Length: 246
Length: 292
Image (cartoon, rainbow over all chains, first blue to last red):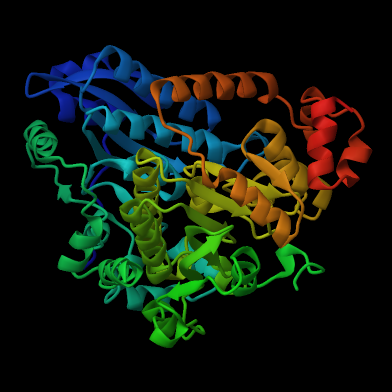
């Protein structure tokens, strides 16, 4: 029997679960989250998206501005990034104005924060797909996901529609190749998510532990190999490093 | 040798041969190593012995560089697990050896047939690119074909210090066909080549400042462009991100309600749209600068 998909909680409910009463200071404007909250009594900066919104040029700038503000006004404060976005809306004007550059700018701001000692922790709370996950969430030091989150490149039905490969074929292959499966758990097998958190977890405690254990060393390829979901990436990378050193 | 052939018409290995000093290129993980995608094999899709990415080291003007070129003819240059791991490895080698890294892009982004692995590889490569930048190791993206840089690779290209484009190159996230499907043919006719190129092409990207150089569609011109950036880097500092924030805010305010790319060209100093459309990349850059 198919497991029921856990019910998706509202944006405010998710914030309250993660940050308790301190979530009240997080602003939600056009489904973009910015503000400060507390984890284990310590201040954190919060940026993110909710309601599965699209991230456009304006949203990227809004997030970037808050990261810059945090670097200037709250040095070394950990930044928690929440992701619930369907991605970038296919839009000609957004493309003409260089949406990719807006995303690149947001990434550069986060990189600056990392270099200046801010820990970067992502929690995928809802949709975390495609470009929306790449433009900030996947750039964190450590990435976590709620088990109710939809994490991955795209669901099999969408993959099938674009590649013209029958969904049944992809479905069958995904049993042995988690990269093709959509969801937080298979994404964790690839090393893309450090740990999946469930509804019964004490999320503030989980978040506090995540911040404490964070490291700027990208460990995803190691995790993917260890967990068996992404068997080749680490070895290929090592081979490049070895052959280039000769 | 390849002078008569346009850069966008060359294959990935020809591009590398034409950019590098004669005989200086050594390929890493070359085709004889037979590293092929297990995903494509399972799906019954032809594989490639380099998984669509040629990487190695070479010299340009005597200076050592790491060099990669994506193979657009192979599943659109899309990034699968092996392709992506080769890319991450190369930028990591560049950071380790403090050697500039040049990526000749030709990719629609993540290889859908391999699912999320390619997406994670792009994220890992972004981290490696910024590792280079923190060490002032130049990272240069060349975007010179109509396959261009799209999807996650479009975003990745904006993480590099510099982007060199030709008028033929395109940079974006969503391509015209996807947008047409989403917004309708009235809003974006993907068959309207002039509109497509004015939306994502090198000329517009150069005007807005997203491409750092707009060069002729020849290997010589691309190599000259690369040479100019090899000694430079673009630091990620508080000053640089604050000024970029202002610039992008200004751009959005100025053009956010504009749907006509000609209006963008005009307000960026191009007066004669017809002449500018027909001008070569460098001529166009000069026209815009002189306000003609």
